[in-house]
Image 1 (cartoon, rainbow, N blue to C red):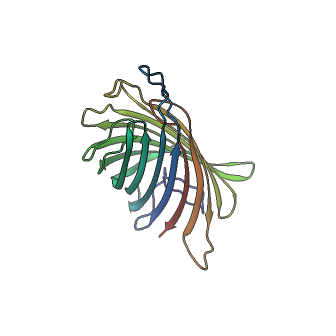
Image 2: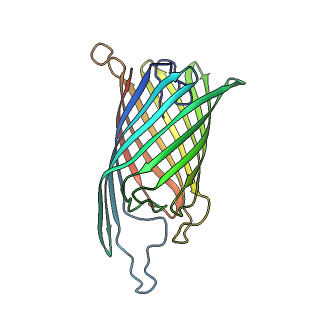
Image 3: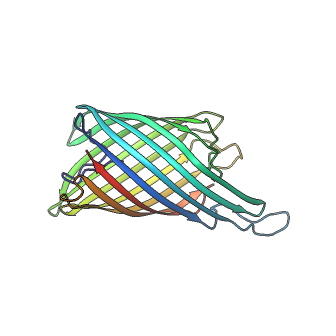
Length: 260
């Protein structure tokens, strides 16, 4: 999701034609347990578990027309899973995403948009709960609601995204509902609080149910215009607060944003 510091607007708003924003992020994720039962009912032993993942992603938004913004993303993933049965590793480009966001119009100060996205997965992801493999594709249609406001004299915004992902290879479709709230306490500084929620529509191939509810917080700070005009840095944390059929993950994130 893209944000603009000058007028506290989020990815729910279109970019002006010919302008864009590139966000490059490094995320470090770790987990030492799963949400599901780890006890081997045959032996009574608890399976040791350790998971680490580092992901570098570049997210791009580019204004094409007044109401149409192109969206793209490329991600590289390095992960390591240590299980009682052995160690599994992945290292390579993991996904390519492309689509657009089209602004329908405004009602009661809320901007409504539709956002279709297609994701091509380029490697097997060991700990992905929906069993993603190289060559799998997701097609998502999301509805986006965005609103700017002012609270106690501070510029704020909120963005709600509700999406449905259609998935191939026998993987169940996924529903997600994300909410982002942003506040600008001073010029050039922005706080972001996100609620990220996703669930598989039906049981996975392993007959387990997937559901994840996460909270994320980050700070975005604009860099001096004299040295790096249009650039900002981000630092944040994301944590699973409730879930089923997934891992108890904590992720730390740093990013560089550049508007052009």
